[in-house]
Every structure is written in C-alpha cells, then in structure tokens.
Amino acid sequence: MNQLTEKSIICPYCGEMITVLIEPADLEQQYIEDCQVCCKPIVFLISEHVNGELDVSVYREDESF
Image 1: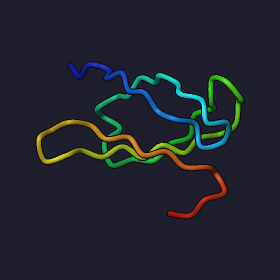
Image 2: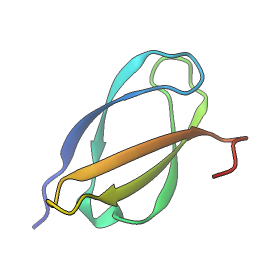
Image 3: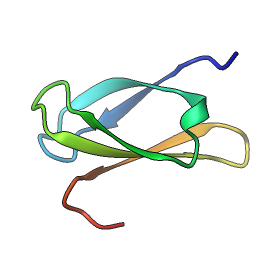
Image 4: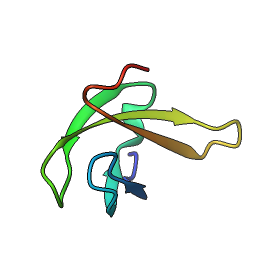
C-alpha cells in the first residue's frame, strides 16, 4: 500500500505556501487541484528523482509547459 506524501508548494496565483498530500500512484500524471487559499485551479505534475523522492511541479492553468 502506498502512503500519501506531504509536500509544501507555493500557489502560482496568490503566492501562498500550502501543504498538499501527494499520492505516489499519481507519478508522471497531471491533475488539477484548487488552491486552499485563493481557490484557483493549480495544475500539478508529479515526477520522481533518481533517489526515489517525489517532486511536485505546479503551474497556472493558463501556462503551457
């Protein structure tokens, strides 16, 4: 069973630091979650470092990457 990983991110809209729970099964997937402060949609992209640590990249919904 995979455990959720707690990560701190900075909202690309309001700049507030928020804590999110990341599901390791979401690796290499993109999904949208609303900011807990400003309620705007944040695009999350989960990847894995060589050492196995999860990396979370966040983008505005209108950004291309």
